[in-house]
Image 1 (cartoon, one colour):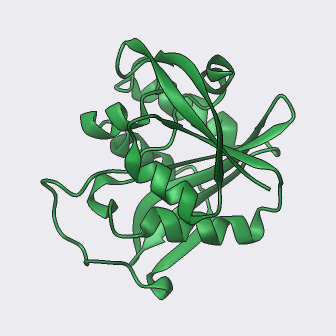
Image 2 (cartoon, rainbow, N blue to C red):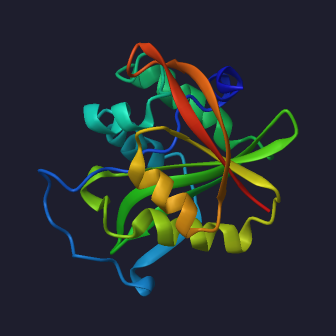
Length: 186
């Protein structure tokens, strides 16, 4: 199951930890977060976000070469044009803070998100996912997260996803096979 995800999007949930980055606000207010349809210009920001080594480690199931900008932009531009994918950009105080998307794999809806490290631990991922799920009606919808990505586990649980199982897969960012947790929202 892990291989099918990697073939499609290439990344899992990344939720940065608060250490060593510029402070934004202690928590983000509801009115400060906006979701909008992702535009191709947003991909430049997303590419930069996924270059962070710590975020890649947390996401675990990442692109083979996260520094290959041409490959990244080609892949995600193609995904933007796929009607089965609902890709949204998360905006905080007029700044791009991350992305969130629903895609379908083998008939099952899955959710993925990536938050810029400087917005991690502020409630951006949780609020973004809650807002996203208000408009994305696919159910059941699944989320997958590395066993040690506690931030993303908490985000999914706060959004009423239930942990339903585990899987193992080769984590490119770690160059080893790891366990991942499977979550489901009905």
